[in-house]
Amino acid sequence: MRRISIFGATGSIGQNTLDLIARDPESYHVVALTGGKNVAQLAKDARKFGAEIAVTADPALLPELRARLAGSNVEAAAGPEAICEAASRPADWVMSAIVGAAGLAPGLKALEQGATLALANKESMVCAGPLVLHTAQAHGGRVLPVDSEHSAVFQALIGEEMSRVERVIITASGGAFRDWPLEKLASATPEQAATHPNWAMGQRITIDSASMFNKALEVIETKEFFDLDPAKIEVVVHPESMIHALVGFCDGALMAHLGPPDMRHAIGFALNHPSRADLPVERLDLVKLSQLTFRPACETRWPALRLAREVMQTGGLAGAVFNAAKEQALDAFIEKRIGFQDMAKVVEQTLEHVLAESDLASAAITLDNVRGADHLARETARALMLQHH
Ligand code: NDP
Ligand code: MG
Image (cartoon, rainbow, N blue to C red):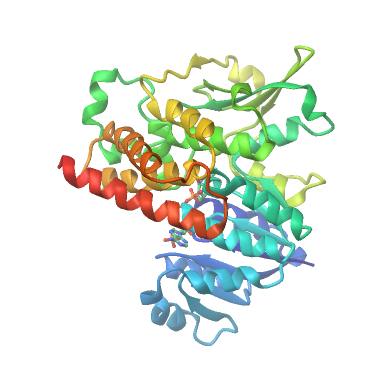
């Protein structure tokens, strides 16, 4: 029986992971499930799967979690430290599916106890890629990508030599506004941005898809995960979202990974690696698909993509600054304090300010330094937004 834990169990990725576990409950022992505000779901799943411990990120919700778990054998806990403590409990396979930089510390804890970390939380790689990979290596754990593009690249690379890779192309659906005229973007609302043409995901990543900040994070994630020269990473808009990524080799071959837009594929691949198992995902009918289309990923429409290149060029903790500024700008957009296109401006200005006034570009990538960079970037982004409004 494999011991598994799911961080961010109440979210979109967490629920898809539990869906797979529920199909084969005898094979798994659930150690820890964590959530944020949705303690009703957390308690329900902790009971259903017989988890050892359920943790909410919010200490104010601990009494409610306790009440909902009364009479069960599930332990209840709350707060970021309790989440890290739960991540320290021995487990064989850990899903990292908390949204945002908050997912980094528990992922590192899981790696420190030698677990296989299924990484949906792309922010971990963006903020601290080398630290994540080094921690895995130092403790005999490993990191498997769950982001669909990175799972696709990983699969296309099986049996290949990295030195023969010429380029990696990750696809983007283009998000909610891909067909909007540029002039209209200024009036885009969070509600409009939060509807994805192809994928059903959490609110934040869906809005990040419309702004391409999601793809920007993924470009950085690709560089970190596969240790690639940024010049080899390309983004192409592919509205059908059937090809998730392609790897081009030195002989001109391009290996594409196709699959339906269902995260249970990438989750299931990480869950069953190095083998493959039957998964309850739709099988593609190529004739029905009939055409796959591609468009350039325009950096005027999506400045986040240009910023990602700048971040990779700067290196060091620029990724942590970029992500934190993006999280703050996204909060402000969701709360309607800034417009859709202001998000990229806030992030760009935050990067300029923070990198000019600190030595973060050359600082060592440790958890403390990442937290420092994150904090500074959030304060700077907030101050910039106050100045302008
Ligand atoms: P959701 O918003 O659906 O879920 C996020 C999860 O994190 C929930 O369990 C939420 O709890 C919890 N959470 C939120 N804030 C905190 C916090 N500060 N501390 C601890 N837990 C917290 O997100 P998704 O499932 O869509 O995404 C999760 C991660 O996976 C993200 O990094 C995303 O970029 C990545 N990803 C997602 C994909 C998808 O298809 N959804 C595809 C590829 C990557 P609660 O809901 O109870 O408040
Ligand atoms: Mg993705």
